[in-house]
Image (cartoon, rainbow, N blue to C red; front, top):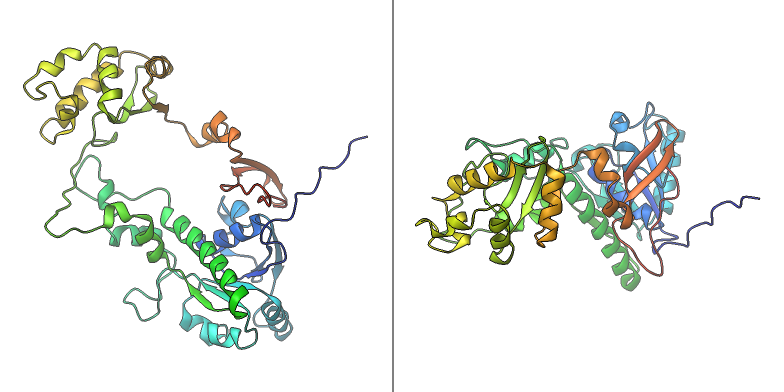
Length: 366
């Protein structure tokens, strides 16, 4: 007799009711985090479904949620939606305040009917009075405006469009964090509140290293090819056409690498004067990258990874998406999740990023 799998223990947000009326990526992903930690999340969709349903990531952003379809033009549908809002602890919206006000869903109107409600507002830009207010979700525009795209330059001093919209992922993390903080404050005050987390907020918070300004200091990006600007901390191609990342960031790692490559003689070069870290000086970068690139092209990738591991130098393979989700490291830390989605069938996705010993998160339903 095969017993059904045991139900996971209640999560830390067990008993918290959430209405997710957001669209796109950031809002639904923030609600996903709340659901992963045990909240009862209801995904509200219009007739015909959320426009984001066609995106592959939709199955992940909306896992652990129940779904309802409500026609806002139908009085009975609006009454059902309002009933959910009156009984919710948290609600999420991603439209502009102007659009929400026209439908009576602005924070003041909604919270007037439920004073304990945490109203999480997650549009691309906050507040509506800002110059860019009213635009749709656009990670690329935020990356361009903040200079992040310019910081990714490779072959030429021109901006690069980032493939992954990590600004939206950062906004999602901060949205979920802010909602939990507001719930914690409610324990003391007994009242909910409105919380705003815009996409621009997410980007600025995610990039403190690149966006901190110091008087007199200038950021002068320079093209360095696809591998990166630091010769001993970058991507390299091998003889089999596969790539790996070399992380010889300090002399303790770099000197054994030079010895392995048969390049110890370059330390006598007047450009280095015995200091291996001088390879990273602007005037030496192209020369040093050329030396290492030529050396790493002499063997296949797996052989280099084995040799680098033997000398204790950090290095890792460049994997495609499918291989990475099957990597032993990902499996070991529990970040590979697989479930059956009723629309897509078998879906493999990243798992749960945080582990609470007494009240762990869980993936219960697609």
